Image (cartoon, rainbow, N blue to C red; front, top):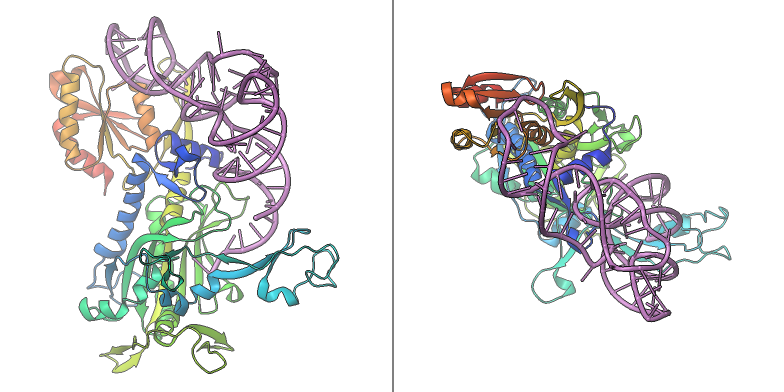
Amino acid sequence: MSGNNTTMEKIVALCKRRGFVFQSSEIYGGIGGFWDYGPLGVELKRNIKEAWWRDMVSGHDDTTAPAGAPAAYSMVGLDTSIIMHPQVWRASGHYDLFSDKFVDCKTCKARFRADHIHDSACPRKPSKRPGEHDDCELTEPREFNLMFKTFIGALIDPNAEAYLRPETAQGIFVNFKNVLSTARVKVPFGIAQIGKSFRNEITPRNFIFRSREFEQMEIEFFCSPEDSQDWYSYWRDKRVAWYVSLGLKSEKLQLREHSPDERSHYSCGTADIEYAFPFLEEGEFGELEGVSHRSDFDLRSHMEGKLIREGDELVVERNEHGQPVHPGSGKDLSYFDDRTQTKYIPHVIEPSAGADRTMLAFLCEAYDEDAIPDEKGVKQERVVLRLHPRLAPIKVAVFPLVKKDGQPEFAAEIYRDLKKRWNVFYDQKGSIGKRYRRQDESGTPFCVTVDHQTIEDGTVTLRDRDTTQQERVKASDLTRIVEERLNI
RNA sequence: GCGGGCAUAGCUCAGUGGUAGAGCAUCAGCUUCCCAAGCUGGGGGUCGCGGGUUCGAAUCCCGCUGCCCGCUCCA
């Protein structure tokens, strides 16, 4: 349903106008790559996260295999700390991967990795290396670190360096044994987590699509190596279906399987769930979620140390003395399977979603402009957010048609009654048409209006956001009717 | 990080060296009308931030920050 003329400017303007998203620290001039969620935005984002948690974790049936699943499985949750032991990031590979030294050439504006400068070519004279041409003006090697650095303890001590997590996943892996020994789960099972992550992006851009502080919704699903490919397929399809179920129905949503050479060195299968955001070129898509088959890479890393690929195998990276460059914990994270009487390191399927990106996609998909007739029958343009009822920040708005004859009192009573169940908004300011429009822009599925007839027979009008059609229902039936219509 | 463009009220913008403006939005009152833009009145801006030139700067100059576009980057 989303209009073709949905533009990023319109989305950003709506987000600010209606209080979905503000620039962080705006009164001080703003700070790049950080965003604040306003009164409606926080409700929308919470609804997304709660839908995810409900659908993936708390509402999951451990006792039967869902359609398409190889077997029944358990799901549990975690909420781990943002700052972890620095060794976590060394063993996981993030430390080496996320920090690099770069040299810039001030003349030709090119950038080279400091450790690759000897096999790089000068862009102005490819036969020479950077720095060898007379005009070259190279900077000293400068460190780029995509991980936010901080210090543990009040004293600024280089030995107490720590990092804000660049992903939530590692908190799950390092707790694998804790969960196994306390939650009475057996492989296959999944651990879910929602939380903030931080990356010092070089170029944060495109509104909340790429920011330096963002929120992830991640599942690490542990299974035996034998059926890992089946589980990979299961999660890939299940996650796409989730987006569709909440309204991403258009051709703008796609699943894209990575080619083997595109995958990370540890992965034996990766698919991106992508959305054609308005800021992208025609035919381009932006990642909402990556579903990755990570084999036993993560658990092995935290056992043995940082792994690198050597031929077809992953081996511990060692220094000249044969010691691991970044040692693991040394703890045994393998699993003993009672049924098969075998011991193995579980393989991991990781569906990793960005909550902020998902919210942006839902907003883009829901944004629509149509025309409805005004009091004189002339078509007037209308902006409406056709959000799925589960995601709508406000479920029902209640209005008195006029501010007299007991209508505000009657409406307030309905408001208080519905408020027991849902987030409901009361408004008596401005013309009735204007109040409908405000709710249309906020994505509110239903408006209830108290009018003259209400005082006589206790009926109200119930207006549908998408059709603008009204029907007259008993005020006493509202909770039941709204519950049916919301279907949540 | 590099190059280009932009920055005045919540929004869209006018104002090019001489007391900061309009429309919309918002708020109060009137109107009581079922799909925005009726009437009256009110509030709201150290003109992104800092420095400089000038008797005087939103306006000219320099630096910074933010946003947009293109590179770069995107585990």
